[in-house]
Image (cartoon, rainbow, N blue to C red; front, side, top):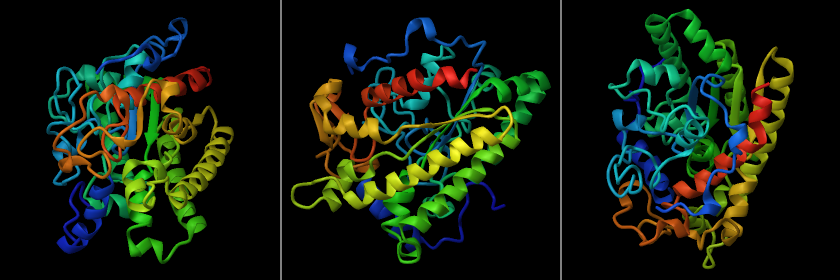
Length: 369
């Protein structure tokens, strides 16, 4: 395997050719935006001892801070509403799904990145985050962005398990594996950048063959997790990519409509992913795997923002809201609670809160059986 985090074989020109389109694309909590997982059903930390997360910028809580990549957001205005305005590398104004999951399950307030050198034993025993913004299921996605691929995230996870064994013993590690909750959320960058903006993919694959390539990677990753001992696994589907503010601007015409072909590719992959997860869950002994809707609920929030307590869903809060992401975000809107999107690519904390609440309500009872 290639050394972790170093992709020196790529030319600077190739990297910049890829990065430019990605970057171009790329608090007050009202009652309607609170998590709805009923109090009496909340899970005690003893039942779910740890949460382990893999994926991309939707769930990354700061791993990219420790990489040689421009895909990092450890500067203002990111983190504007995170514990008094602390930029931590989360691609939002505040918490991301990883944080809300551990918070709602009563484990801890936030999920820290595995690469954080200040992690202590308590952090390790209650779960860590391996996600890396800019990555995807397609190995090419992470390679071009110089971020942590899923293959490398698995290697880091193996290292993590060995650390837990050495610090707390074999039984503690086995408990995390058998009773912990494992979350996977990635695929957006495969669609927006690697497929539609890279000739190495777009001109060699049609929608069906490319989503099959993504699926093979996803299935292999999930089986690797299972073979390492993970049993409770939730996998988010790809969001309605064509309705992100950046895609409306770049591909939606003068009216900035949702880009239909982007959504079509996302839906096709989600259909295949859902079927594969059902198959794995039924065929792997003691596995509890669920497909988590990452498409239709976000789409409904975008199409009917008032229903969820929002006013604006076609632009983001930072910059003009139409195209800016990461270092292009220089200023923000005056009231982020009105917005579905934080930048042109990522949701706000309040939108993520709703999505996580829906996941917990629909799937936790099954995952805990």
